[in-house]
Image 1 (tube, one colour):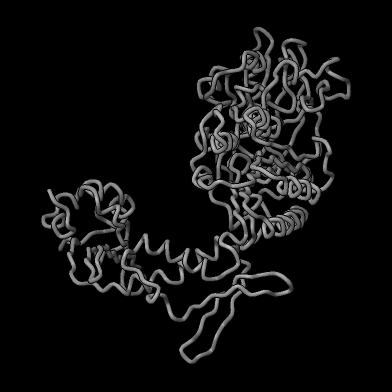
Image 2 (cartoon, rainbow, N blue to C red):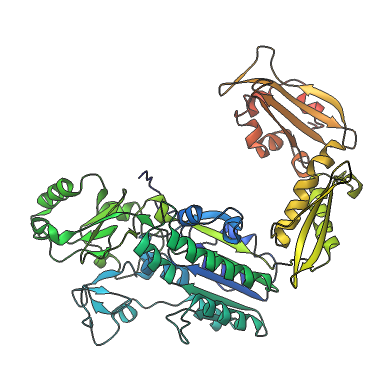
Length: 553
């Protein structure tokens, strides 16, 4: 299986989500926010919900759901999980807004120097047994943390947690959504953290991270169906959906099958099957490295404690006072499709390493289904407002006459409808399950070209040199700037040939044209990067272009 590494990016990370939520409610953050989410938090919602689907990374969605699925079409971007890309570290970061080095909940099994034992932190048991690690909860006592729910409550903001592990402990995904719905109905602004764990269990058992898998496909389809129903009835609510980590279908082996290797260790390794840490006996580090390489080859990157700390894989924040004592001497970081277990669970898929499939998770954001009510003109007006900002000359009379729109009730449910009327009067009806946001996008896309073509070209400034340009194997045929009858400027680029070539038009906004010529060139990086054969430096030195576009000294 093809894999590629994706080390944690703490600037575009799940840990940024709770900080964006704190910032939105006006509460002091404990870390950086996520700009991709912040731009959706520019309205005042009654309810903000973060729903975490355990294990449902980007590739899990990609393999197992159709493109028009609610989850897939609302995926705004992919973001990074933490290190390790596993439930203990990641969900704690989602709950606290802190990086693993800050909260020190590092892995399923973690070494605690205070009791000199490896502890299964969620169960408070000794690694590989059902025996209690101590008379107290070790992780909660030695590495306590403050959740963002607590921070919000202290600031007078209602915040709730809905999870199978928090009373009243919903036993199904439908119960999670039902409890969330009831909380949304309460008066006042609020934050709701909702979590569902069974998706991770199914992935461990059946796989589905690298290929379509019927069991996970069925589970996700049912979850999507319930989410679609939930969002259809949402009012004044923003729903954010992500995962704590992804998955990778992998081959697992047990370290106990190599006694010569475990004999080098002070204790069994801890953390995760795809990120293990090793405390090595004094004087045996060279032997350990040699044996590990011989047994596991290139499936893992064997890193020293210093290397892990220098690369700040556990995060860039202020370290917890107990953090370094948990680390050991070496780390086996999975970069292939292998894992090393202590107790040999029969899993098909797992996580914890730095392969993209387990590190990259979706950022899914869904607004109210009927963002602008149930009058179709509201959506047409919203689309026109977007087009007017792009094209100041735009008028509704310039809309494509073939398209019309409606909101119609079918089976007791309102639906967004698009009609296309052919020149002969024949009419086609389309119902693709759009919500309000995507219906507005549809109207924009339907009419953008018509508005562009309504503004005739009055003058052309050709910038393509006579000697021609090779544009990455394609022949640049045309590169010209245009002024238009109703105002504004555009660029037209054509490359290739008349059989295999292609063309693009770039209209420039008023904002792009309002600064200096240099600012204009900098703002259009795609056009002037050289991808189309010519660069910003070429344009800057081209006599007459600056004046043609109306830029003054």
